[in-house]
View 1 (cartoon, rainbow over the protein chains, first blue to last red):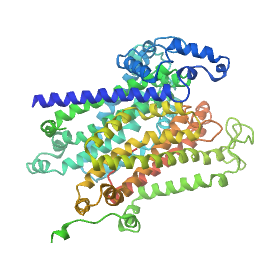
View 2: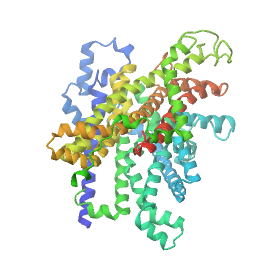
View 3: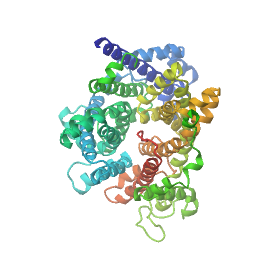
Length: 326
Length: 294
């Protein structure tokens, strides 16, 4: 039993390693090999004409870009895997130092969003499943489909208009520097997190509701009902654990979506996070920074998925016995 | 006797229309509103050059005018007719999304059916690639690809195709696996039909409803992503009218003229809301599982 669980975790870790390596390859191909290269991409187009081909060739060899593609990929791969990330091409600043605070700030916001959203989704899922097809269920399902359809940048802007312009409750944009005390960052993250939840909770809610309806129709719940256990207790204690599984299976997809949305939300609220740093790096074509942030985003997704797999293992006894072949 | 028990029914396109299920779906107000919104948006996108009274990039009056009979929604910061721009603001995003999603459906269906039906090592390889691609947040993947392929509007088509293929593979593969165990597929295999024939004639026709749902959901998701990208300054650029871009431009005057922000925001939201409510209603009526919303 324990051995099979260990084997399963080992398999998942190996897959996580494979996925991250593949991600590094995609990011490398996208940023360094396709039209032009990291060097010509880093130099603004209007300045590029002042460089002679010899100068460019010399700069390339200094940066090691004249080596073959596989060698350069292995170097990038090694850097990413060891969290070294190298230095920026033009200014030679350490990428790790540059992005440390923005990444931590974004992690605070995304982590808070994750906790709030899970609590919200579970509460809504249980409420909706108390009477499937009832008025409350329909109201919650329709409302979440509606908020899910609202573009993330529209929701954020409406929040700015309502909370900052009309009500004057919070400043319209956040003026905290990236290295502000983390408590300040946490406070600044509250409104963006609500905006994230408005858009993001719906998808999770749908999966949980579907799982709840299925669980509530199963034999063991019927038995509990016949035993006279009250409905809310059946929903929370008997149905919820197995209903969480389809939702947890979609964790990777969900966290990836959350990170993508938070880039937009950060931009609207001027939150000092990794999203802003990514946009800056994209506009200045700072390849090593883009690679580092993309890789860390994928790492967050893979890590969240790993935790979700462990949670499923704890919730579903069938997976434990099946794990020898899956 | 055993022959009769073999389920050889296949779902055909003609079954989808004119059925009591469709009528039941249309009786739900949310579904009906969704369909009306989608049709209105498609008509507006198609007829935009006829509806729009002015050229979308022409400077036709003083900037930031109030709405009047001459300019139904006023003029924007540099004096372009806002109504013309709002009407045309979804065209490019819709067209790019449609073409990109069509490619991703084509490729994704082939990969998904092959992985699901052949199984084994093929399935393993395809699914590991799918898992990897889906671990990169789509916005970051799009940003990297636009960096590589350039910011031209036509470059967004392959970008959309690359981003949306993997979700299609997952959904199609899951459906293929559940179909593969059904009697009519087994019957075809026992008749000695080739794998290719089984995939094309037995499995594919049963995927059409699902693919219709996928098409609609992925297009609405792609429109959302492209406008988000334009909003961030990474997608469609000036002077092309685009709702995401218009929301971004309007942020500068949000304190004095919030309408400039709300109009394109309402247009974009109503399109996405329309698609999602339409798909939700129709797929429930036809029993197509849509756990995987775009």
